[in-house]
Length: 234
Image (cartoon, rainbow, N blue to C red; front, side, top):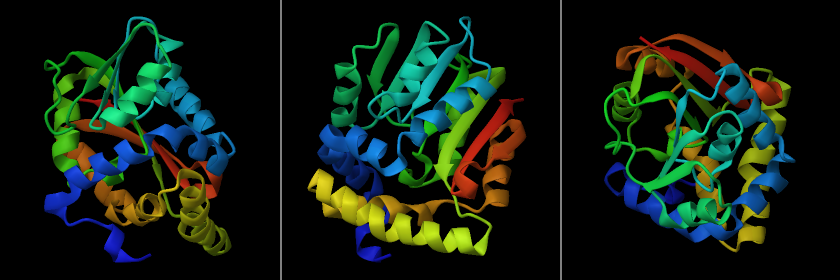
């Protein structure tokens, strides 16, 4: 994947914000087409694994157009959706989700009190941060002890044949189709390329433990092309 679409660390935050502002109007349409709506199934499964209930206060970090927030709202009346991109938040506002507070903010400086949420989730956003350890530290700050964390991200299938097919689809078909539908080819070249920012499994688990999370469990939907992680705040 060409490296010209990956911004240097010092420019990444601004570049990612501008990118998601641009693709926000067609983002949901492209996602549903690319995954056959399986992305919603993965989110629902993760919310169920986290056992979200009405007394929970849920943070949807990098909420985008509100997919996780909308699903969490089916289980609790207390949901905060936070995103860096004003364009993506506009998409979330258009859904008119009762009981969901939408906030523009930075994952490195969450505008939330210590221990103010019981569940935090984030979908396909980790690779958009310049550094993950400060993000995990902020999540550990706002999630109260005993609270739960859920993360969805892309992954590399273990099976060589599946990995080959997935690599072709993810690195070739996604940029082509996404660029065609959205009219922003560069954005949909960035999205697959940004998987290069993700740490390998053991390092990601170490980061979470250092931040203050334990009982880290990982499931691998779609033959391992997706990683679905849960953890408990110490």
